[in-house]
Length: 422
Image 1: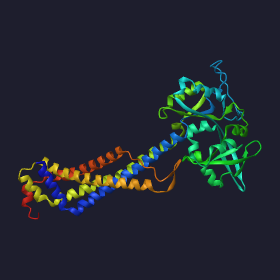
Image 2 (image 1 turned 135 degrees about the horizontal axis):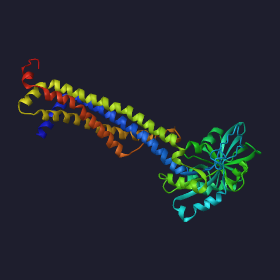
Image 3 (image 1 turned 45 degrees about the vertical axis):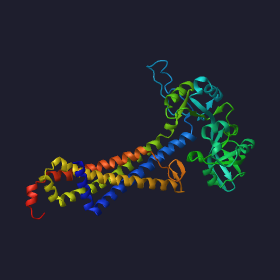
């Protein structure tokens, strides 16, 4: 019986070949668009996470102390006494981590050596960079090169220059590519750095790097000692400490533990980029919802061809019921037709999606995708999304056949065969 139903379903679809192919093409296009769009959104998110995990610190110890002075100084003396402060003006002090070498020594102990794979102290300084008639405010980041390389892999990201030139040159600069483009900087160019306080200093471009993270490429790196001089910090103080951990996706508990031990605020990369991660998620939901309507529209196309088939094949359906075909068998017949149309369109759409994803991924176009700069589009090749979208498309097409099949099952053979217009 299944073979008979299959043969009849094929004859019905081939009987209206042009309409069948048009419907299959519509289902294929909707499947291709849905898979390609999902691949683009997931690829962008995965590329962002991968780049951040590889380039940015997993946990950052900042100079913000966890236990600041309480506002009501008398609560610890007598809870019934309240102190109020009007126009409290405090000295604006820079956030800094004191005695950072002791914290680095702590990370070298057996208890934390396996959890923390790299630690790099840094000093941030906002300065004005001047070259000829060009001037631009930039973020100066003082680093220890070997420790910073363990965090961001800066040596491999140099597009010009080398590490030796940076290490042996006094007041040497490693310039992010964005800054280099904006100020037209090249190797060995002289740049005047003017801090907010203190005298200006002559610096030399020793290298240009490109990380793909826009925030990093919009900064300039110098030696830690030089940055401390620029900021007026003693040798035992830094702006913060960047950490790489063994498990970057399960670092919340370690961050809380480090806050208690060091007394400084610790921020994970997830919190640092929470707004961007949330934005990617919301955009993904919106795009998925919009494109899903295309799949629903293709389901209406499947329903349309089956309604037409029921109308044109009413006499054949009546004869089949007269020959002993049950209502459930007729329902199965048209649901099977919807399944075949959906499956053919979904599989075709999957093949077209592979081609479109490869095309987009191969385009030699450098684009700034949010917080990242990439050459070509970041596409995801997760087969789970292919199977999920193809399965949903086939399900929609199959469900679209329910209404026409129910109509076919309700046809009365006697009334149909008596109608001379059929």
